[in-house]
Amino acid sequence: MAKQSKRQEFLLKQVEGLSSVGLAEAVAKLKGLEASLPKKIPPCKFDQTVEVVMRLGIDVRQADQMVRGSIVLPHGIGKSKTVLVFAQGENATAAEEAGADFVGGKELADKVKDGWLEFDAAIATPDMMGVVGPLGRVLGPRGLMPSPRAGTVTQDVANTVKEYKAGKVEFRADAGGNVHCVMGKLSFSEEQLVDNISAFIKQIRAMKPSGSKGVYVRTIAVSATHSPGIGIAL
Image 1 (cartoon, rainbow, N blue to C red):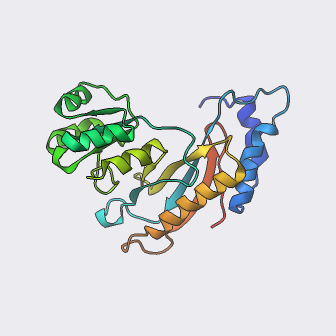
Image 2 (cartoon, one colour):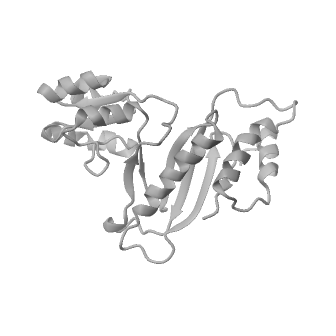
């Protein structure tokens, strides 16, 4: 097991024994961790990404209990995504006008098949799925495969491109029933992070599968790239 750095040891002590707290308090504590570092320990040199993880009472082996979707957070995520669109004709023109970074058909699919993956989100119109379908083995494991459920297979490419350029994020429960999602940057104000996290939690609660029994939302925690997690009271 790798030895913890002095920075990690210090930050872990700052949250040691801290039980789940209210959302606003959790965000304030998270933002205050860097400022609490003593002078002998240098702070992180980049703007850390803030993430929330929710552990859900679902059985992901059951198709009707999968929790998956996307959300446009109130304050974005502090980053404009690189968007690729599989479209043709008027839809291709609409995607380009909306700000898509790459637009094309079979030639673009062949490029992806050969290993090119320099984009953050992939969108496709329904008529292009015959071209996009074979890319499942490449895009699926990376969470980039266009899907009707995620809203990335759509005729409304213009609005979908604009949403992703503004920072729309996708989420999907992992094998353990955990849902992870980026909430923004540590440089965001406390109010912005609270708003984003509240919107995400509200959406996940609203997506409770009918087959989920017992406690649905079991735990919630917020963390930054190089910080320990802080529990949020349910």
